[in-house]
Structure formats: structure tokens, C-alpha cells
Amino acid sequence: MSILYCDCFSGISGDMFLGALLDAGMPASHLADQFNKLNLPEFESVSVAQVHKGTLAASLLNLAIRPETDPAEPARHPISRTHHHHHRHLCDIQDLIQTAQLPEPVKEISLKIFHKLAQAEARVHGTSVEAVHFHEVGAVDSILDIVGAAVGLHYFQITAVYASALPLGTGQVNTEHGCLPLPAPATLELLRLAQAPLTPSPAKLELVTPTGAAILAALATFEQPGIRLTRVGIGAGRRELAWPNVLRLLIGEADVHPGSHLEIETNIDDQNPQILGHVLTRLFQAGALDVYFTPIYMKKNRPATKLSVIARREDEAALCDLILRETSTLGLRVTPIWRHEAGREIRHITTRYGEIPVKLKIINGQIIQAAPEYDACVQLAEKTGLPLTQILQAATAAGQALIS
Image 1: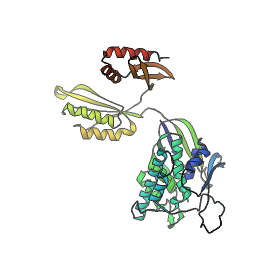
Image 2: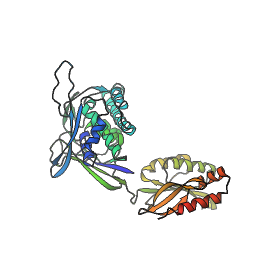
Image 3: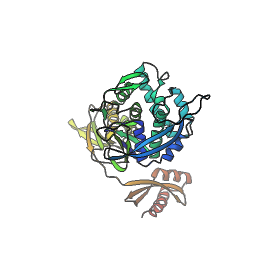
Image 4: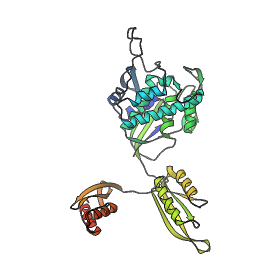
């Protein structure tokens, strides 16, 4: 699966995130096409400039936004992405996104980010989510930043987002609510909701904006993943700092490395085995990669069962909690492990008896094994009235023809 890691050593903002997505290879024309599906007449165009931040080359996002005008007033020139504010409630933004002709995943991600932001704003201002009155983040440029983030994640088919610790700048910022301390109250609440790790920074300015914090709070896990790197995108911030003011996005495939999987074990000698069958089903539903039982003998020669679970590291807490709640055990053993895996693919083949799915084992792009799905063969045998062995032989022969 494709994953994304945000290296936020100089913080994160919506436009830095979008600039990095464009730098990683998303065409500006694709982003503009998606923006044009929103009912935002203020939006004009997207462009990206190649700049240097210190010695690093980076992409700087530019949004051309037309200011709102009174119909009786003459039109003015377009303005930059800043200083353009339109106050909207959450329901206004939800309607805007839901009625747009955007892909459903883009809508879902956008709304998830805005809802997380509304939660933070409601707590900060002591009101309800429905009554939240967005100010800076209700502006057209901020809406485009959030929807654009969703567009980029959908474009690269990102299934998981990770992030580094965030630098904690200090100082003050001027907002619609007046002069506020940094991090801004809504930003700080978003970081609290996400339980984001923070690191001290000498910066006396805003390094993490509410939009950037909302993206991470809604989508990110704050840890560094194992990744097989395929793309790097570098997005430029607008300020000049004593260090390169950039956000780096690392995109690639989830990689298996030592410790990325776990084996969870426990010995059980005082539980109805029927319940263990139920536990096995629940563990698979909760994300276990494999579950198996081993008959063992414990103290006093008492027959018992060893429960073993192979799992991803990120599923450890949920699976351990499930075992402790559903079984009589008082403790679990957890051992880091790693796996070497062949590629696999399900392909439907046609036999003279009907279509049967076959599982292919692939190494270095070469099919080296083909095994028919047993349950599908059983169903076909029952449907045709033929012996199961006859169906299996036909499916196996057809599968062998696929081997390179």
C-alpha cells in the first residue's frame, strides 16, 4: 500500500503540504481541475514556483483568488492567497463539499479534516460543533488547502499518513479574534486531540498553522514508518528562517522490516474450547494476520492450549486488549518478528466446468505456484454434481498453465 510520511522539522501549513504534493509529481492542472468542481467563484487558478529555501530547492504554491465584491462595485484585481476571509459555519462548508463533483474519497477526507477542526474550534470558544463560526480557516484559500490535501492523497492513492514530531514555535499571531499566543489556541487543541509529539523550537513565529494541524490531527499517526521510498516532495513556506523553511513529504510502499510484526502468545488451561473458537474469529476480524492453537501440557500435567497470533505492530494494543477481555489469561507474551513474503494474486481461470479463482505465488515478477481456491471448487462440485477431485484436477491443470 502507498503511504506518506510528513517530515515537519520546520512545521506544516496547508500551502506547504500542497506545495510538497505538487513537487512530488501531482500536476497543477489536475489540482486546478478539482478546484473548479467546487462552487467557489473566487478561485481563479493554481500555479507553482520553484524557489530556494536556504540551499534547498522547493515548490511554492500560489493560488490566485478573486476578492468578493458587491455587485454594485467595480471588479478589483485578484489578490494573493492571504488576507481573504469569508466567515462560514461547518454546515456551509459541508454543503460546499458534498454538492461538488469530486471523487467520494476526496469528499470524505476533506470533511474529516474540517470536522476535526470544528471540534477544536468548539472547545476553544466554548460552543458546539454546529455553531462554530470559522474565520481564517473558513477563507477560500484555507478551504482550497484542505480540499487540495484530500485531492493529493487520492491522486497518489495514499492509504496511511504518518508524521514526525512538530516544532513548537512561540510568540503571538494576529487573528480575527485579536492577538493570540502561539501556537494558536485552535492549533494547540488539534495537537492535543491528536496527542502529537512536540519539540522545542527557537522560532518566535507560527510554524504549525491550524490548517496544517487539522490535516495531521485528522489523518496522521505520529511515528516513522518502514517505507520503500518512491517519491519525495518538498513544499516551501513563505517565511525566510535561519534554516530551510520547507516541509518534506516521503511517499512510497509500506516496507516490512525487523520489528514491524509481532507474535502474541499465551497459555490457557481453564477455558471452554468453544470460546476459543469464537476468539479466533474475533482476532481475524480485528486485523490479525494469522491465529493458531497448539496443544500443550502445563503444570500438574494439565492439558492446555497455546494461543498464537501473528500481527502488525500497529494492531498490538487492540489485539492484546481483545485477548485479555475474551479469554481467562492474565498475561501475554509479545515478541517482535519479521516476515519474508512472496507476492500473491488471485486470478480467475476458466475450466470446462466453470470459472475458478486461483491463488498465484509470485517472486520477482515470476509466477512459480498456482493453487485453486478450495471453497470455490467445493461450490462448483455441488453445483455441477461432479466429484470434487475431478474439479480440483481440472483447476490445478489450468493453474499450472499460468506458471512462468
